[in-house]
Length: 203
Image (cartoon, rainbow, N blue to C red; front, side, top):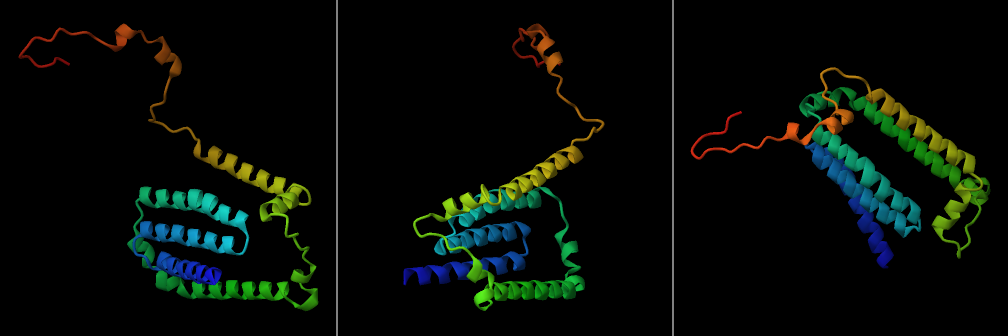
């Protein structure tokens, strides 16, 4: 009974926060509603026994992606009124994209549950005594080891590429010279002055 109540609570909060993410006028509020949606989606994952995905939602999406979105939105000076002006122009394309994504999801669910020849019938059942994270880790580091390492290499190349693209030589930027700082003597950095009373400081 309590699991059913928790499911409907988390599901309602996910739908409500996702709707408010789209409808909020302030982009900062949209990111905060998105974080709430991630937290409630993690609760749904815990209910079905997918603890690993729940941790990914909290650690990766909330702790990194959503916080990055929040800082980017707060730091960039974006004219959101100008961005909203093209909403009606791209609305048909957005509706078409939603229909295509919904059709793909329905097709995927139908293929998974297609009688006795579907993917659900061919999936290897996980023993009850084996935790979800242990079973997932066993598959990742045995059967899908090369795929996992390939995904890591793709992320590493993307990280190096982002650093190379942003680390460029720019003029008019004051950089730190460590050798010059170490060669500076204390008497060159400070000056002792016997300041008379009633007089201002001479620069």
